[in-house]
Amino acid sequence: MTVTEQHTSLRTNLKMIRLPVILLAVVVSFLVGGLLREDSAGGMRFDFYCSHWLTVERFSTMSWGTAVADYYNPENPLLYMIASLLPLHGDPELYHVITFVGGLLIWPLLSWAYYRRYSKYGIDCLWASFGASAILLSPSFRSSTFWGNTDWLPLAFCAGTSLLLSRFQDSEAYKVRAISLLTLIVLALVSACAFYTRQYYAFLPIFAGWIVLTRTETSPFLILSVFFVTMLPELFLVYLWKGLIPPTHQGENFHRALLNIWKVGAASGFLSLPIIAGCIRRSLRDVLPEWWGARSAVVAFAGLLVFIMAIMALGAPEWLEKGWGGGGGGIIVKAGLEMGALGTPFILTVSYFGLVAAILFSMCSATNAVLAATYLVPLFLTRPTYQRYLEPSLVVALLLFADTRTSRTVFNKRVLIYNFVFSLSILLTAIIYYHLFFHGLWEC
Image 1 (tube, helix red, strand yellow):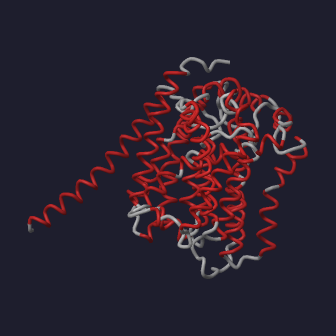
Image 2: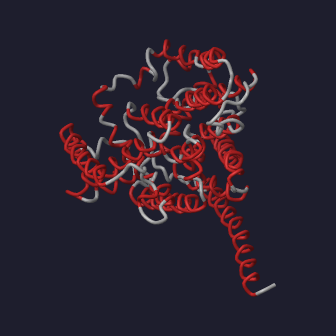
Image 3: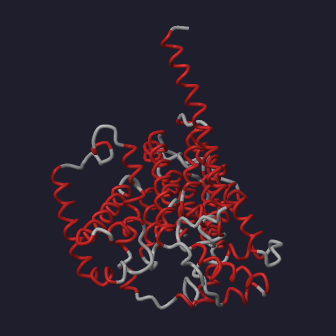
């Protein structure tokens, strides 16, 4: 072998060794976090003991019909129903062990889903596992897994839905033959389960139905019928609750709920940074559409000024007095609150960036438009929206369900590395922040 060949071989071997070591370190950190009862998302311990565990016991000690009629949590009840079937015997520690193991198993499931979709584009199992390992660094995923809250389970259904769609999801230029009735039923059930765990995962069954309708020759009547049947339990809940959430959480003013748009935009803009940065090789032109020019930039800047003035007019001073609406927001909001007079423009600029990114993403294709609309609209109408609602589900949804052209662009090794480092940075920031400022304050 020549010196050049030896150097190339050594570098390749180092890369092959490096990734498994990184993955092992991530799993170890996940294990340590679980043992130490880490709460890097903030408030999960409080939510568990003051709400979620009480609801699990409620479903375990009475009929589901009685338990679901009126309970404190705003979420759909699937997780509590599943938990009530487990032999917990009133032991929250056993419940934590079960959710920890279940959460850890989502990583290989998501790795499989990434590999199934991207193996034909040069992504091997190791890189798919590396890309999926970012969820194990997510404060939201870690905390909800360690404390047994509802935010971790829907990601399993996202991965399962992607695996069921993978055979025909990228056949955009033509339709494949009709799928079997059994496959259609399983797909409808798996995607609906995410929604029955958290309402803001309504995008998953809608998107799954859209993909089957537009990518296969399956009868539209059959598709609509099967997905309608899977929605019957939700119709019962709407009848029982007289709304989409339990009566204890109803009564929010619709006008005030619309103000939630800035929080959704701020979280979207922040969490999309590693993906956008990973796609830039020379300049912003790499990620902007071809029609974008000087005129578009001027219009976008004018829109930013209008957005800031409109949100300020709708009540930003009141939000500032109450810590920007009390709950919700995320790192961007917390950083803005420390910036004084520059805080509000900073928060709203990031928010506007996120909204523009979502709009440009939606304009790429009908598939992207359906995904973005069904993912974001429920968040606009839910008050408050926390950063943990979008993290890590935003990246997972984008990588699993964006149209073929977009997904091939964003699922590259540079993006995966940037997203991994970004997730690690969020985790370290969150651990330090909540340890320093909120340690011991989450008691009922």
